[in-house]
Image 1: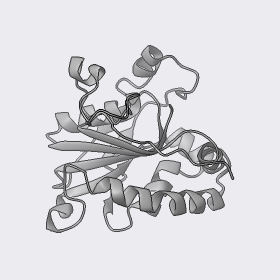
Image 2 (image 1 turned 45 degrees about the vertical axis):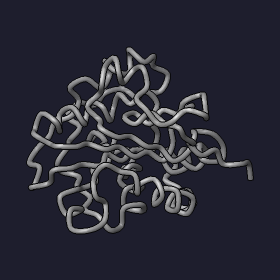
Image 3 (image 1 turned 90 degrees about the vertical axis):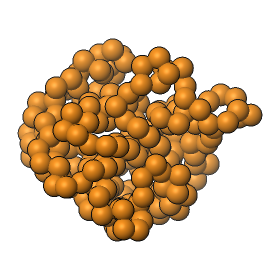
Length: 209
């Protein structure tokens, strides 16, 4: 098996992007200083390379549950370490005010695929937390993000989500399989913040380098 590439620090304290220099300390990157996004804290577990990339593709496009099992085995110990630095309580009494929200699929794509890979990932990694699928809905069946430029990705996800009742939750953890530009999680966080959410965090299994 090829060596698994972890996302190593130091990282941007908001978007989670790794810095080229390994001698610096965690701080805001230039993009987040210039234009802070609505996501307060983002972390990805691995770089989107083999073998993680094939496991994600196997789950996402083939529904291969053995890929999900492998991702869970790889991800759980890494996630536990990462969540210790999260800006909201994940364990303890305050965790009751925090819920996990998988990136939703539009009903048309869900009907065709028969499952949401982000929901499966969330259920396998956050077994001790509330996972909500009705708070954020994808109301526009937008084209896939793959192959689009950064600007096209931002435009492609604009106004595609709708938020309902927050159900007394104050903090949200968005879960996705892969983060590239962060446009999708950013759009979700934006509508949650408009509803009065205090903090929005994001976790992905992988991020593109």
